[in-house]
Image (cartoon, rainbow, N blue to C red; front, side, top):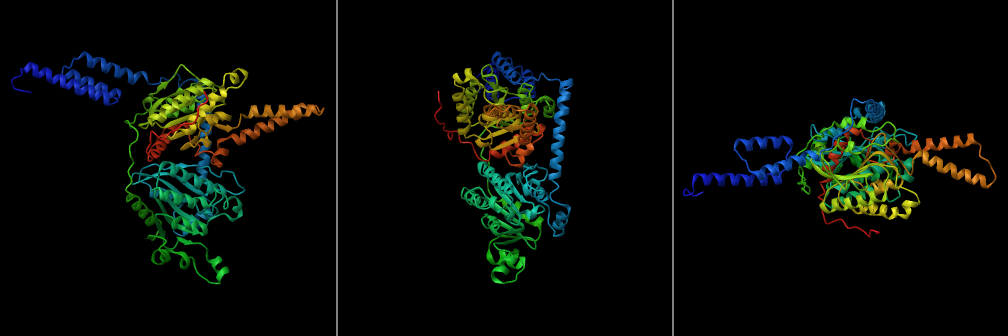
Length: 602
């Protein structure tokens, strides 16, 4: 300011400039209440009294408080305590089952494994990822009670971990279970891990220790499109798209499995334990009468010095894992920001309270906003169309700083609810905002009135929107998932990047009670046409059998064993699991113009 301008004028200009800076600052930054308090103190200290500033700060304060969800649940109420006790028992059972699964194979198999100087699969993962960071294990219950033999975690450990800050898909064979061979569910789990890696552009690190295909199950492992060979197809296509493929050969790598390191971008092999060959010593002897050892046929010296199949020589598991970490550090990958990330805020309410929010009786209704308040940052939620289609709740929030559009069931789906959600999905797709579906749905409303009102076409709008939205989608089953409601709420068939289930959830074409009633009625009508009167006791027995069947097949353990999900989780861990899933998903930048919808039937 020129020295000719009066000191009063200079002071006015100073405050005007400061006012402009403050207003710009406010418009760019989402303040926490603490930030606003500190900023008000600073304003008073410099005698800043602009009416415009006061009105804007008041508006900002209102925005930061009015969009905070207020819980109406008391954690000291008898109902809360009863709910908490019931769901806690289910969570404890889940932790017990997963705890047993994480013990790997038999004690004998583990002792032999260690005698060979090898680390267990989960120990390898723990040494590979950055110290102090979490490993987000996927589908820990794969293979649970699926076969007439034990197959903990389906014989393979998969999940996402950070290596030098880079999220990677980790795949580790567990040779303490069936020698690390591939049963049908092992193949399915390996392919699912690769699908997640492809969708989210995550480098793959394979810790190979496998005897190849399970020969006893060859018809369900080898010949079809989504069988063993698809693993190598996926490696080839991912490598062609610049998604790194890294193999650490820490045990046997036999027959078709030999292509895992052979098709990797870089491969490490451990001396003395790592072997790669298309045909092992017994097959070689039978075919050529040549007698060779594992090491002579496909050991570290063969493949690092002679064949060139592998690139790095390690003396033990720890060295192989160290080399693997160095390979990842040289990938030169950078996560491009495609969303606006905010500072992380804890929810106002403890996520542990979710155990008391969910009713003990699954038929009892509750407000799903109580769930949302315990998983989103600051319990802040900007609801969309709150007064319309009230049986579904849509709105914008942040989880671990990442923006999300939430679609949560709050009752049965009516036409208005479906149309509202289709509109909301379009908004999120256009803005490049990931979607989070919280499923607790018995289905769409049925009846003459609703069919005449066009509920089928309204439901189709929602299904069309869900199917074509190209933003990351994450689904959590927090209750029932039945019938067409599963489709509208982004069930497995609709390609969510990640799908998790709570231990209280159930999934089937319809509820067990409804299915039992329908099938009993159909059979009773058929018997009446033949003149047969169905004995009431036999009818009850038939109905009870159907109820038990649906309860068993709709249980989350049954679903997870078959990889209908990516894991059964403690409700209190939902916020963290979704946050880590969003972080992984954003390795693949969101392109706002990618979404193209089909014809919406109006």
